[in-house]
Structure formats: C-alpha cells, structure tokens
Amino acid sequence: MVQVDTNDMRSMVSAFPNLLTEISITPHVWKTCEKLREGRIDGICIIGMGGSSISGLYVQSLLQDSVSIPIINVRETSIPSYIQKDWLVIAVSYSGNTFETIRSLQEALKRKCKSFVITSGGKLHSIKGVNEEVTLPSSYQPRAALPLIFSALLNLVEILTMHRPTDFTNVSEKLSDKVANWEMSEFSPKSMAADLLGYIPVFIGSQHLVPVAYRAKSQINENAKAMAFSSELPEANHNEIESFNSSNLDSVIPVFLRSSYETDSMRKSTDNLMQIYEEEGFPLLKLAIRSDSKIEEMLMFTFYLDLVSIELAELRGVNPLSVDKITKLKSMQ
Ligand code: PA5
Image (cartoon, rainbow, N blue to C red; front, side, top):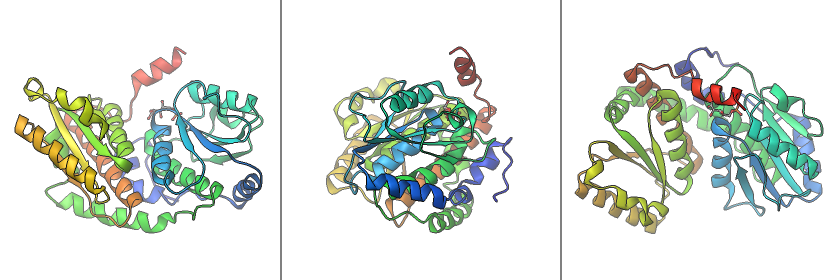
C-alpha cells in the first residue's frame, strides 16, 4: 500500500508512479469481462467529467488504432442515440456523485446497456443494475487519482477488447527513475513553472499527446488556479495559428509537447509551426521526453506537468487542493 498524505497535493502527485500499480482487476471482474465478451459488444462508451474523464481520453487515443470496436468518451448529461443495449458503458467518477455522469449512466441503464463503474463510492456505488464496479481507495482528489483510474480503466478495456493487458510495473519504475533526474536538471518542474509564471500557457500536442496537453491545461487551471489552454494539431494550424500574433506576445506562451512517435508529416508541420511562432517573437517552450513506448511517453509528460502545476501553485501562493468554485457550482445543481 502506497503511503500518501491525501491532505497534501504534492504528496498525492509525487505518488503518481506508485499509484499506477495500486489497482488490479480482480478475478471476479475479469470473469465478468470474459462473459460479456462471449456476447456482443458493439462499442465502449466511457462517461466521466473533469479529472475523472481524462483517463478515458488517454485510453481511447492509445487503443483506437488496435481494437476492432469504437471507443468513445462522453462528457455530458446524455449519451448519443446510437449507444444501445449491445454497447458497454463505463461510468467513471472518483467521488461517485457527479451529476452529469450519473445522468448519463442512468440513461444507459434505461437502454439496457452493459455497464461498469469505476468509483470510490458515492451515489454511483449504489446504482442498481450495474454489471461490475472497480472500487478505488477514497480521500484522494479526483485529478490526483488519475494513475489509479487510468491503470484500472486501461486494463478493463484491454480485457474487454482482447488486447494484451498492460503491465504497469515497468512503467512505474521508469517514472520513479525519471523524477530523480528531473529534480536535478535544468529542466526541473520548478524551473518550468518559473518560465510559465505571468504567462497564459497554451499546451500544444498532436496524436496521443492531445489528451496530455488537455490534462496539463486542466491541472494548471485547478491546481495553480491559473488560465491555461490546450490545442490540438494539426487542427490548430487551420485557425488558432492566426491568433498567435504580436498583440499576445506579452501574455501567451506556447508549450509544444513533442513526441518521438510523430509521423513524418506531423513532425514537419509542427517544426514549421514552431518556426512561425518564433518568428512572431513568442518565447516558446518545447518539451520532449525519452521513452520506450507511447504509453510511457504520455505518462511521463503527465507526471512532469502535474509536478509543474504544483510548483506553479506554490509560486502563485495558492492552495492546489481547494476547488471552491467547482464545489460551489456542484452544490447549486
Ligand atoms: O479534479 C476535480 O476535482 C474535478 O475536475 C472533478 O474530477 C470533476 O468535478 C468530476 O468529479 P468526479 O471526478 O468526482 O466525478
């Protein structure tokens, strides 16, 4: 069992590598997956909001090129009309009390979809008619539970789609090694946070780093209470590129997440985009991390940028734990 102080965001984020190996799919859940597989599964629909939704985006981008059924993510109060009884719906809510997630799951149950929930408790825990639950340890912040949720969700979807389940032990060890190097290097999360201070970062990613850029934006928003955005290549080359002009030079900083697995055309167009932004005078940041696989690359970036968000919170003098406005809005629903 990992020792984590759940009243301290830095402690939760630091535990990222260890949390990846904390949840295993029980033989009982594994059997249910096998049973469901014997029937028909038209597609997998992952429901969740905020910190609980990111893992679904990661899973979709990792598996979409190697599985034979669609994997979609829903981040709202209803599910598309084509989600019917032969779809498998996985509702992810760390607290188990998120209105949109509960509503969408209830709709799926009405349509007689097969369903799993991943939660630490709350209302989701007691909804009748769900096929299986993967129970998470309680008292984390939802966004800090990403390694717990992601490892469980990926393994679940892998089993359901007959994909070889990822062994997180190796990835976890590599992440632990990396963090020691980062702390000592000139690219430490602290120095990166100092580079972002006073700017609005736009995290730019392509392919499997699109959801990673989105996660970075969300972590800066929630932990550091700072404006941040993310954008997706190549789409941003067709619109957002025009907004990177001299009127934003003092406020915006583009942060490019570069992958070792970029296709040739993506590499070329991203290099060109960086050149254009540089010529415009932007102080751009380029991040690249050595890894042995896409999943490793995604998780290393995520861990690093999570740490950056904590450092930025400290530099800004804010508490990364509190999410007062999210809580207030939820209480108004
Ligand atoms: O990180 C957070 O606290 C939020 O983004 C939550 O994840 C979001 O509000 C949804 O709540 P939950 O993850 O409990 O479903």
